[in-house]
Structures are given as structure tokens and as C-alpha cells.
Image 1 (cartoon, helix red, strand yellow):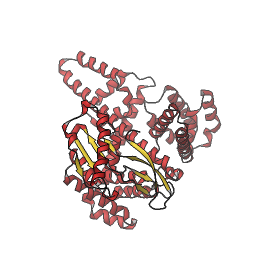
Image 2: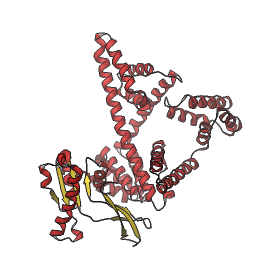
Image 3: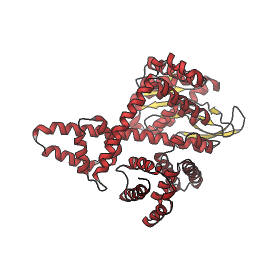
Image 4: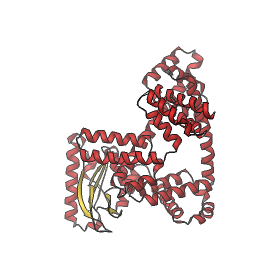
Length: 451
């Protein structure tokens, strides 16, 4: 990893040795993840594998963002360095930075770096450069204090507390609460993270904004189900023209369009928009503006979903990193089972492939162990109906799938049909013809018994 070094420190709590990755130079444009670590308080933080305590490594820092011509130096006072030693440390980091930039990237602002007296001061300067005002920072600090109050409150006091602060419970409040839970999870304190998420669910139930979220979610679920049914009605071999017609049908409903793109993002590729552009050109003059506006709206939704997908991948990668460093990964998995979805498994598999490509068998072995633990936990906690459907879909041949159905379908009741509904809704138009065929076969057999 660029701009980092590894060291061994002594845990501040149990005094056991702790391996730590230390970063002294942050180039926000080249390594945006390092900036995220700085702003989230995770930079140079090493959890102790023995006791779970978070150890922060003190080191001089140089932060650089060429897009904003921003250069900030920070030397922790706790290090007790003399002025000459501070200048020498920052000078070394400056040489490393300018070496990475080359002559073409050198500009005048690099000759006069700003200084931060504290780490929080460094963070605030970075945020201000991003357009975050001091007022916005204070509002966020207030939200964090409010979240901490809810977390520390006994469960029986929550209703009164929610009523008192109901006006301050909004989307940003829940985002802050989720961020605190994620940070706690990354620090290896999975029990506390689980408690925070449970408190969050309770606040959703009790607050005015939470009730609005629940009502909105129910409406969205109804829209998604309607779109799923329309997609399924197309049949097992849909064409791009079918989805284009659906998009035109839903042109006046943003909720339906968003659901359509969200369920079938892979359909809306370059070839789809080529066909759409051709259709716009062939349409009567009075319809072209409307179709062109629909095309732009679809492009906007695709870009938004891609951005959300990137964020989801990053969150999955952070969860994987937390698992790899957790002193008790099994406990962490059990406390956060809903977070281990298909995307997490895909990210883990991709990391395994990359480790094997580098012939890093030690890392590959750790990743495979985590992957197998998660799969085992998911299977163990899966309802019997879903486990059976999963076995049918995972059978190697059609004959094997048919044998499983014939042998075991009578072991279940009508809940198998409900599980099939859920699986078919999730698969939607994304599943292969083979998956749809097996689900249809299983449904026919189940309806023959329970229908």
C-alpha cells in the first residue's frame, strides 16, 4: 500500500503487541480512502487482537489535495518533538510528496503548507475546504451528542426521550447513528454496534420521522412489487425493447422508473440507450422532447445507482476488513448477519481471486476462512424453506434438482410458497433461464401439494 509503513506497538490497555499500519502522507486525489479514514477517525487506528482496545499511533501527517490546492501539516504535540525535529519530519514528507507529483505537478502553494495544531483542527480544515461550514460541523457534533444520549439511555426511558427530542430526529440523525454503529463495528466492538442498531430500530418505531419512513417504505415496496410483476409478465427471454416499452409506460411515475432501473440496471447499457436514441429520432416531432427527457432521466437514475453501488462495495470492503482483524470473527458475524448479503460475498470472492493472483496464499487463506464462516452462519440461520430452495437452485444438474424436489418437497407446508414468492421477487429479471425454470418447477410441485 502506498504511503504507509507497518510497525508494532504496545496496547495501551493490555500491553500486548499490536501490528499497526501507519500512514503519514495523505494524497486525497490519489488515495480517497485515506481521506475517508482521516475524516471518520480511523486513520492510524489499530484494534488490539487480544482485548479489542483501539490504539492510535501518533505520527506527523501531511495532507494534500491538488484539486483544492490544499496542503496541511500536522505534528502531534504528544510526540514532544522540538521545532527542528518537526520541520525535519514534515520536510521528509514534503520530499516524498513532490517526488510522487513530479515537476509537472509542482505548484506554488506547495511551498507554504498550512499548519494544524490538533488532529481535529486538521479534519476541520479539510472539511471547510470541501464546503462544510463551522455551523454545519457544530450541527453534526450536536447530532453525535444526541445519538450518544440515546445509546446510553435505558430502554424504558427511550419513549420519553424520543418525545422530548422528536423535532431533531430526521434523516441526518439516522445517518449519524448508522455512522456511529459502523465505526464501532470497525473498532471490533460488535456488541455495542448491535446495541446501537437495536436502539436505532426502536427510535424509528417511536419517532414521527421514523413513522414517516415506515409509511414511505410500505409505498415503495408496493411499487417495487408492481414493477416486479410487470417484468415477470414479459417472460423468460425479455428483449431491450420490452424494457424500453416499460420505461415509456412508467414515464410519468418517478417511483416506478426508479424501481425499474434499480431492479434491472444491467439492461440499461450502452446498446439500450443506442436503441432509445434511435427511437427518439424516429418518433413524431411532438413526442421527441418527452422521449428525450425520459432518456435523460433514465441516465440520471443509472448514474445514481452506480454511485450507490460503489458506496455499498466500499462498505462491504470495510466490513470484510473488520472481520479479518476481529479477535472473535464468529461473534461479529452472528451480531451482524443482515449485513452479509450477496454483495459482501462477491467482494470477498474478488479479494480471494486478487490474493491468489498475487500468490499471497496467507491472505487468500484468511479470506477463504472468513468466506466459509459467513456462508456457514447464513445457512445455519436460514429458514428451512429458504435453505431447501437454495439447495434446489444450487444443484449441479436439472436431474439433481428434480430429485431433491421429489424427495423433500412434501416435508414442508404452505410457507414454502411464501418463501418462493420472496425468492422470485428478489431474482426478478436478473436470474438466468435455468434459475427461472427451477423455480417454476418447484412452484408447480409445491402448489400441487399446498396450493
